Image 1 (cartoon, rainbow, N blue to C red):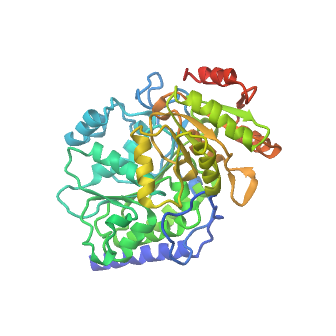
Image 2: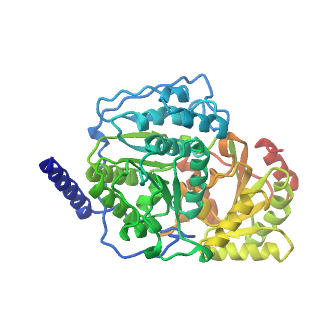
Image 3: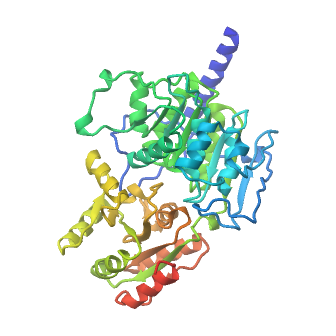
Length: 504
């Protein structure tokens, strides 16, 4: 047994060394908000970009296309979901949650608390791959609003042994807002299981406790941000010895963005040293080819197990239930007038609105321009205190505020069913190449409207030739044509657009 353990440890160390020596894909900076904690220096730990999918067997999983399997979720009937299966394990798609052989307390949470009826298409394909022994890793790309959170939360809850008071499932998220949101879903779904959980996010000033004074973590599920999780691991407060499942939510962001990549790889290395057979799930709505190859290489080299993949075609990623428009404005003042005279007036009739801007300065400028004229609006961006960010998000989710200005802090994973309107005050562009659109961020922004299959609309405000060019590149990238609102001055044109979107 000792020899076996030594061999496994040596293999894990060798894998970690291999990853450390390889060259990472180019990191990408974001305009609005990077990390929510100061980063500590560490040696780069990444891999090369060569795709490993050629070595895998490919076979499709087929489910009943004639039924819309979940009334709450956006499930395009013609969605082309491809599964890339490693090894000889055969998976049958789940037509009901009972097909997954879940314990009764979990089924009760799904039906009574979550009010689900059947798995969505994404869940029907991915859940058998997550829950069927031997537990293989999964790299999964799926539509916004298609039920990704349910997939990995159910996976975590199903793997936990309630009798063991130690961390067994770990979920890492790019922002505190997403971590808190995922924790809310976990508590709701796992209400009847008795499973304990803890949120690993930066403490606000009123609840601050030095890490040296806090007791070891005994919660069975931990959900948090990479900086805080790394601090807990480094301080020996968060044990990896009993970990069975590791989840990266918005995995492309976690493993491609400056700062998060280093923390994420560091966490994975710590897990490999303690529990090399831990199952890894990586979920996101977007994976470009370079990031997908990098993620595949990381999983294969570090954890050395088989991994499955699930993804949808690029052209199918934009939500069909969301109608997108472009609005040409002569200048920035006209863009602000559109917000005041069109969005505020019409938006209150259709639900809540999120206005996305590129930078913190843009957020402050727009907030001042609106509030100075008496408009009620709240603004969130990374420079705010943590307690203020939490308060603003809670007020918006509780419906106490109707219009929220945000940098891309909330572009990913933010679920609020009453958001029917998204405004791109600034189009998303790449930080290192402002003439090129950031199509992944655009997709995530669009995904904030029309959550869970509801109707939604997106207005893209353009005020110069550069904006028009960027919009055209976005249209070409997604192989679609975005309708133009004829006049930025016309209330009737905006009403007609909202009627076409099914909101009026």
